[in-house]
Every structure is written in structure tokens, then in C-alpha cells.
Length: 116
Length: 132
Image (cartoon, rainbow over all chains, first blue to last red):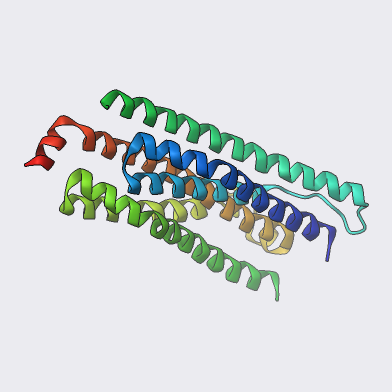
């Protein structure tokens, strides 16, 4: 297996783990918040599924998009740096996606609270 | 496998994967969205909205795939493209990445549509309609 493939696979697997972790941390709180505000189970389910989809797409897209400039016989630390650069792209994408999602939920809260 | 074979096979496989991604996202969101749309707009319009969701997600995925140019808008010749296997692999990855980006944008847009449906559901006219 070439260092390029190893770095790519390591970045991909780590990104999936990060997405699972974020989803696991956010889901219970977000579910109860949405249930309280929206009071419509289908809408809660929709927003939770939407979050999962955008997190997965953003993370895997960033992992696929990052380029690993590693030659055959690259040293261990060169691989680590390449993986770190790939993870930087993944986290940057996740940050933007979460920012947009938080903005959306804030608008949802403000709009529905006003209606209530 | 020669590079030209790889180019042909990978192009159609990645295209199919993109299309399947769009359909998969639609299938994940369809059930809750249909319930919301039906409650907010009635059965007939909800069917239209649900179909629109499907068309939109599929189009977004295919658009992401098609938005990547192998020739870099005419800067690379076909021979130069076929010669470089690493470039072919990188372009395939870019196609999947763009597909993901477009799907993310489309999902956010439909989150706004759901928000509008929820607002319509809470409006006094909708409440009155539901009571009658």
C-alpha cells in the first residue's frame, strides 16, 4: 500500500469517526430542543436527518478533495503531516456546515417563538 | 487496465454513484418531509412538493458531478488527460466532492422550505382551516 493510500484512508476513517462523534454529542440535546420548539415529530426527524446528511457529505467531500503529495518511501512524519492537512480541510468544512445549521436553527427558533 | 479504459469506466461509475447519492438523500428525507408538507399544504400539494424534493436532490447531485471539467475549460488536451492516471483519480475525487457540496446546499435550502411550511402550519388561517 502506498503512503498516499494510507494517508487517504486514515483521513477518511478519522473524518467518519469525527462525524459520528459530533452527531452523538449533538443529537440528544438537539432532539429535545426541536421537540420543544417545533412540536411536530416529523419536522424534528427531518432536521435531525438533514444534520446527519450535511455532516457526512461535508466531511467525506473534504476528505476526498484534499490532495496528498506523498512520494513512495515517504517518512512517517510526512504521512502524519499529510493526514493533518487533510483533517484540517475536513474540520474546516464541518465548522462551516455547523455554523450554517446553527444559524438555521436560530432562525427557526426565532420565527416559531414569535408565532407562539 | 489502460488509462483510457479507466477514464471511461470511472466516469460512468462516479456519475452513477453521484446519482445514487442524490436518490439516497431523497429517500432519507422523503418520509418526514411528506408528513410536514401534507400537514402544511394538503395532500395534493404535498405530493408535488415531495416530488420536487426528489427532482431537486437528484439534480443537485448530478450537477455536482457535471460541474467538474476534465479539460479544465479547454486548457488540457485529451492526450494529456489520458496520460496522467493520478489526474484521473484526482478528478474522480473532485467530482464526488462537488456532489457532496451540492447536496449540502440543497439540503440547507430544503430546511428553509420546511421552516416556511412550519410557519404556514402555525398561521391563524391554517389553524382555522384545520379546525373546520
